[in-house]
Amino acid sequence: MSGGVVYTVEEREQDARNRPAATRTVSPPAAKASKPSRVAAQIAARRVAIDTILLRRAQAVEAGNENLFLADVDPANKKLRAEQKILFANLVEIGFSEIGYSQAEERFNPAVVRAHGSTTYLVRVLMRYQIPKIDFTPVTTELGYTFVDRAGRWVLTDDNDLDSDLGPGAHREVWDLGRIELQRGPRVLVAVEKGDTKRGRAIVTAATEGLNEVTAYWPRRWNGSVFIIALDETDVRDARFADEDIESAASTGSTFSSLPGQDTADGTVAGGYIVINPNERDRVDEILLSHEITHVATADLGGYEPLWLAEGAAEYVSWKGIEAISGPAEVAKWEQEVIDDAMPQLTSLPSDAGFYQNSADVYGVSWLAVRYLVQRIGLDKVEDLYEDMAMNGTDQASRDRILLSRSGLTEATLWTSLATYTPQR
Ligand SMILES: [Zn+2]
View 1: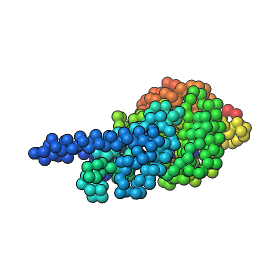
View 2: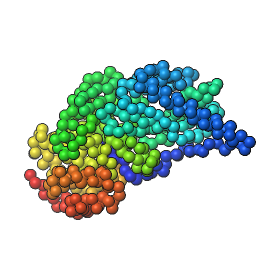
View 3: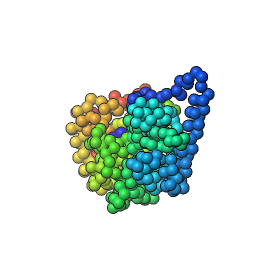
View 4: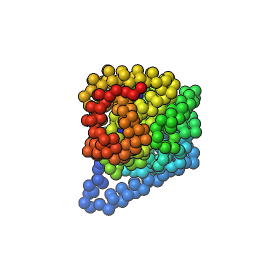
């Protein structure tokens, strides 16, 4: 039902290490001994010129001024100009309360220089923005922009030269992928393809019901709004429905107030957006969405909880919704199937590594673990446990300490308890 909800510590560290892969960070070119000041002055002037362009683009979005947005886009690149018009329209439609771009570091790639000439300036750019009601704080995403000097004037000539070297989901934000349309509810924002209005409205309705279920069945008071992206695209943000998330109907991916590798290896998680698998868009309902919204409603805690707890809690909420509709018999039947069929396929709680690739029903077992904990210590204490894990479960020792102190169990004794568990009916 979900993939990529928690970007594990290991993955984050790996990404931080791997970030400059095919291209590398460069210090200013080794200046010829006789002209160090001239080279430095050129670099400083370029920095100011690019900063000015980036500022102008942000101001253009705020002012809804398309001409200003296109003013620094290479007139010779018609394809880029057409794409930038769509980008601009999308950005204006989102209605950011804050938007800004800043230069990170220059990247060097000989192929890009060959393609664009000797003045090529390839730079990683941080886009910092806040969507009203959706983002509690400004969040950051990254881009790679290629600028060239045309007769003394810098212009943006490409926006995807760096894509393969950026973090997961970069330049695959909802506004980067073709013209969108937004539908809104009081605490719901839905993005669909332009003209896909009926679907957008139906998802607003389903999400509103899903949000009500999360409010009813998960004790954390969360007042946020939910952003759901349902495009005809397999790769949106860090969701990859053509590839690793192929079985998932939806995925909740993190937003970051500080990107992994920016200030810390892990980055700082700010929240999450839901992305729907394009092949499942016709089957979106409040049951599916209540699972994903549980992830969103816990995302800003930090994201360090183990996957069995994250997915177990999300399944717990969505099965409470099923129980409310279908009665307890349906749930009891499912619980027995997990005990009889899924539990024997595992020898311990499913670990984060390989969780989404596991062929056993790790969602069912995770759900059973959370149901067991709810019976043992009560839902409010499970929620406290979740918060503590999400904020502080940065390594296995911390997770063990938190689980033991709050439930009296270790992961090993929780597992053996599950293996001998007889459900209360
Ligand atoms: Zn999930």
